[in-house]
Image (tube, rainbow, N blue to C red):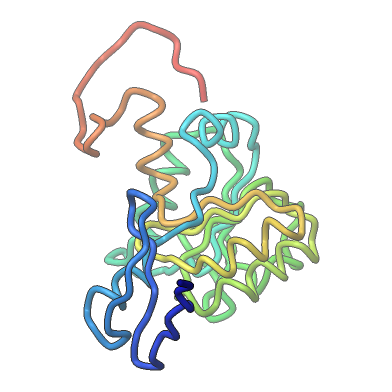
Length: 196
């Protein structure tokens, strides 16, 4: 007796669970949508992110805002005051941000930035990656809350290092003793020399 494989109806989806087992569920179910949207791209480890930050000398903030209420302004302030990075602001609609000139695009910067820190919506990430490739920037760092897995895979396929959905300010502070693992200011004062 042979069993012919079952044909999955069009309204069914086969999903793979975390334990490796598969099952068929209605394609329109919330569980199917959730499992389909799960992230599979991982990106650099904590040790690799620390290496990226230590090697970098310059950072361009794409989508920087002159508005003090915006997170890009806060991150720019932190990087200017708490790091040795040369910080550039990229915003075609601004002339100055935090006392420095704002540039219309990456190609207008006086140097190729080591890190392109991105404060743009997820659908804009591929074009920022293309701009980074065009100028020769090695790393694109997409800020916390922004996720575009296809863009990350695309960027990596073009030789870029991609960090995504992570705040460069939080990561820098965490690696340098300024933040608790959960992101809170530790208030630690240390005589130990801090590395960038």
